[in-house]
Image 1 (cartoon, one colour):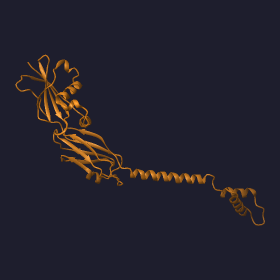
Image 2 (cartoon, rainbow, N blue to C red):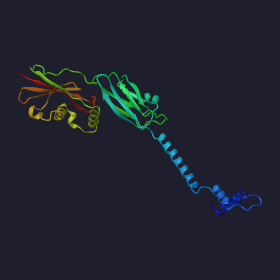
Image 3 (cartoon, rainbow, N blue to C red):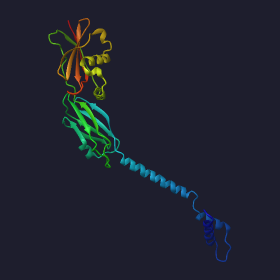
Image 4 (cartoon, helix red, strand yellow):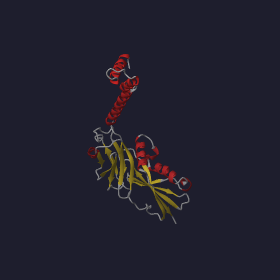
Length: 278
């Protein structure tokens, strides 16, 4: 408070605290001055409130202007259907998301919103062993109109074909046991992407891929069995034989090609059958 403001306050206080023809009471004068004097931090508080409000508005604007992101939260598969759950970084406009979903080859699916930012896509009927491609393009928008930062895409497969154990023709043998190899969708996608980028070169042929996978599921296999030999292939599936070193049986290895024809092959082991010869 400057000198002039104080003089004005004092003058007003003297007028209010005194009665006609009386001497003003000193305590009453000071009481009036205290009531009229502005708080010492009033300007600082006002500035702080303005700055806080401005920062809040700026953050709010940035939130609505930044495009939403989308990630694969989970994939689940059972014998009946496949479910892919997608998490967005913002609450989404459901109508725009529905229009942005593309699946190839064409197959039926249902969209189930678990939350405003969590979408589950259910595929009730997929062809066994068929490769599918799911894509949500950038036309999908947040609830306030901002489009996706980039499209999201994922490859997946239909259920495994149920096949009987493979027995070599013309060979007398009895089945001892079978083992079906389960691969996670994430690992299969990692292999396909790695092949496309020049990695996992051992998976370019079914023989080398079989040896890699046998090392995982049967670490001691070289002590008991010979090198796997290709018996047959139709381009999408291959059958190999690994004969016992004691000549009392053999393994039949079923391999599956992940990548489509015309692209670098990516083979994985899907089944092992143990056969014993009399």
